[in-house]
Amino acid sequence: MSTVHRFTDPAETPDELAPCVVTLGNFDGVHRGHKAVLARLIEIGRDRSLPAVAVTFDPHPLAVLHPERAPELLTPGSIRDDLLADAGVDGLLVIEFTKEFAQQSPEEFVRGTFVDGLRAQVVVVGVDTRFGYKNSGDVHTLRELGAQHGFEVIALEDVGDDERWSSTSVRNALADGDVAAAARVLGRPHRVVGTVVHGHHRGRELGYPTANLSPDSAGLVPAEGVYAGWLTRLGLEAGEHDRTMPAAISIGTNPTFDTKDRRTVEAYVLDRDDLDLYDERVVVEFVEHIRPTLRFESIDELLVAMAKDVEQCRAVLTQIVHS
Image 1 (cartoon, rainbow, N blue to C red):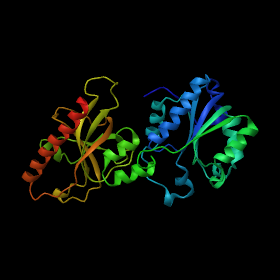
Image 2: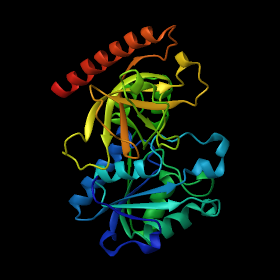
Image 3: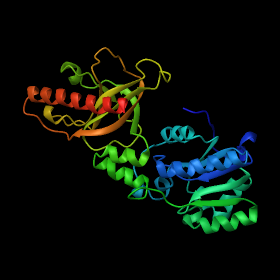
Image 4: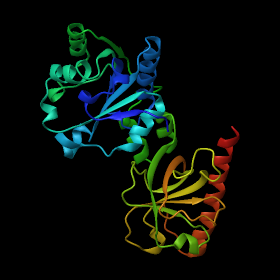
């Protein structure tokens, strides 16, 4: 992960980050639409020899104001922050979103955050950006405030191929198990991050030991099924042996064993039965959907299916490595 200055109060902006160029958003998923804004922000910052700062919120505003409408986040907390850092910003202001904070007028928010705190010279946003009390501020409001307070506003149009790249489109794709479609919008495979915990050990008994992710894993879990993907061990440095490995990933409740388990994420590292991953933090990335979750009439049928799953996953991932 790239090094980035992360702070939570605009009044405590590090000296090296002000003045700056700045953008604003929830950035759930940090998808290609977000990256287009971030790339333009960074480009402008370099042209003007100014640091690039992203401003975001935690928790998601809807989780505070309308929890019944709040989406399940694609990249909660540290996952989003790491992706923003990897996008190349110099600073990340993560403001705690509260009902009190939400009472600020658009002008109060802009003055406190962009003007007094960050001393923004340029604000780069998408054309649909809203901010302030009841989202009453828009790009037109921002331009008026920029004229008053001495910063420039650059608004970027929506981007996308057949449809607008959005967090909602990624959620819809994941709900359908279409992780390849989700990756096209994200610009990378979707990921879930968690700690490896003990499960029922059925995989090991069947010859396919799996890394079971803890129930509090972060990231939206796709639809039930079997997927080809990658498992990355966060405790190892980039480039270290066995850091990122090909995997067959299962999401489901083990219907063949008539259990009433919660939905779990399990990853079998291809052709490896020598790994001890318990208590390690890992990233599981989803590349391609292989098949839906099925109930098998016997263990033998299950074993035949698992062998076929592994071969399909190997073929998918080998093609990626050699492409």
